[in-house]
Image (cartoon, rainbow, N blue to C red; front, side):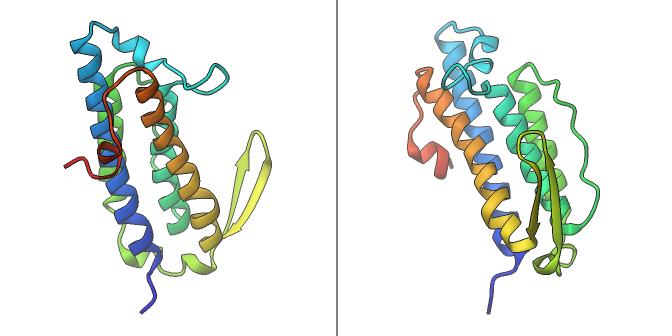
Length: 169
C-alpha cells in the first residue's frame, strides 16, 4: 500500500511543530536562567544576513499551514506576523497545530494531481504538481526554518542537543 499525502505530511509537520515548541521553551528557560533579555534571543540570527529567530518561527508555521491548505485546495488561515515574545510564538505554533489537525485524509485526496503555483518575491512564480510541491519545496523549506531556529539557539549558547530537535519527550 502506498503512503498518502496525508500520511506523509500531517503527522510529520505536527510532530516537528511540537518539537519546535519544545526547542523554544528550552531557549526561553536558558534566557531566564542566564539573565538574557528574551528580545535579544528572539532577534538573534545565525549570521547577519539571515532572518532572526522570531521570523524563522513565523515562516515555519506559515509554510506548514499554507502547505497543507494548498494541497487541500482551500484558502489558508491567515496569521499576522506580529509576535514579539516567546508566549506569542508558542500561541502561534499552537494555532498552526490546531489548524493543521483539522484536515482530514479526504481533503488531501487528489493532491497528487493538483497543480500548485506559488508566487514568490525572489524567484517569481514557481509551478509544481502536488508530490513535487510536498517533497521538493514545502517540506524542505519547512525543515530549513525549523532547523535554523535550532541552530540560532545553539549559536546563542542554549543547551540543546539533537534529541531536543528529534525526540523531545
